[in-house]
View 1: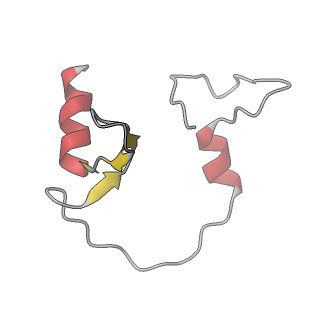
View 2: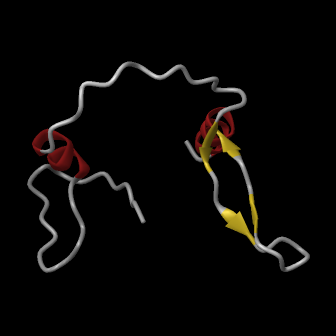
Length: 75
């Protein structure tokens, strides 16, 4: 699970598995990969599973655009 908060760079979370993502990105070497072409309208960003109304788990595709739209609602 990833939780995003507005934390000061000096914020520490002792005795936990919580990490400041900025510190992680600054310490982990990233591979030199070519850019990926993403279609914001149709490409999946996340694929959570829902029990729906039938009880059978099924994937629910959330696109980049859909996620951005929902995020802007709360902005």
